Image 1 (cartoon, rainbow, N blue to C red):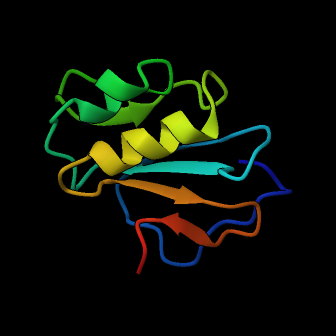
Image 2 (tube, rainbow, N blue to C red; image 1 turned 90 degrees about the horizontal axis):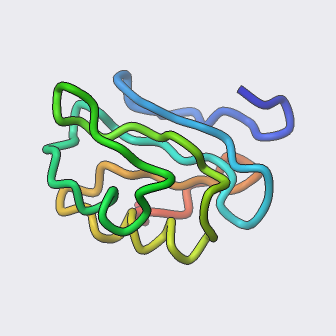
Length: 96
């Protein structure tokens, strides 16, 4: 990934992740073991998220929309499978 955005310590094992070029949200992670394919993240931010053949979300283009839309997409997930981190590797969402 990117050297300027540290890897968080406790990431889930089965993930899809990408680094965003700027903004408060810098790392977008989908916990694919938690994902139930509800499609809400895709409905809110279709440029950032898509569903694969297994009906699990993955990150496509993290720079295709703004931080507010990405946050709304993460908040829309019924199982909180979308994790957001800042430039220091600290979790922004969901709160611990």
